[in-house]
Length: 308
Ligand SMILES: Nc1ncnc2c1ncn2[C@@H]1O[C@H](COP(=O)(O)OP(=O)(O)O)[C@@H](O)[C@H]1O
Ligand SMILES: [Mg+2]
Image (cartoon, rainbow, N blue to C red; front, side, top):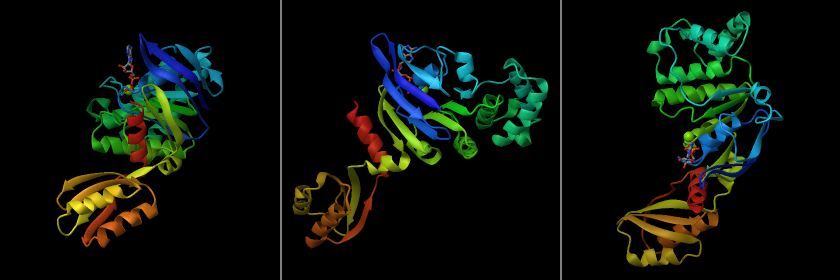
């Protein structure tokens, strides 16, 4: 449904998007994940034809965005920022106004407005003026208007950034609902937990480059190292620290305090068993032994660090 082919965008000497290729199958929800400045917004602006690529192309539903923007974007709903709506209009009036700008017929707007307000859980507020809405409600209305013309693809740029925690939860719930309804969704985010919670797969970017693109499950399996916090009953003697450092699977050892140490270790059950065994054999009772990273967090941090 979405195809980015060798996309590159330069601003002077800066490569904001660097030979980026990826394809999103129908019905998938992909998180376009990267830190601030990674090139997410630039990529989305190219995808939605608000700027042109330096080279490469974007196909939406098989249609080239640059060559046939109207046709390509006809099947796409776009939310790039939370718009300021006229505060004296109600939700339904906002949709009627924006629908007419899109060239939709009045009866079609009427029918679709009810549907899209339901999809974004705003039925209750359809006759309420938007002036009093929270940012989260305005964002849901923005998603509703993006779906008026019955697109199959939804492109969202950091849909929860700037919202309060409740607004974030509500917008994520809406995106999950749209996912269940079968929409193909491409959403950028700098928040790993958000992508993990909402998306089927993640495309990791930094410095405009695609670092990894796979299902959330598979990305978690790429983890090579994990951090384990070990807590002990009595102070950890230096001799034990030396012994831990000598274990072949151990990458680094960082003392948190006299009774707590963080060990970065190869991610395998045998490595964990060796670590635990060597501390206990030395006679120091262990009171806590637990991994402190979520697998995806580790791979994300590793890849972002490596790409510096
Ligand atoms: N119009 C522009 N002119 C010059 N540099 C830009 C422009 N837009 C974005 N950039 C730069 O491109 C890089 C990527 O920006 P952006 O796509 O906004 O990242 P993200 O959305 O991932 O935070 C940043 O270094 C940013 O400063
Ligand atoms: Mg951005």
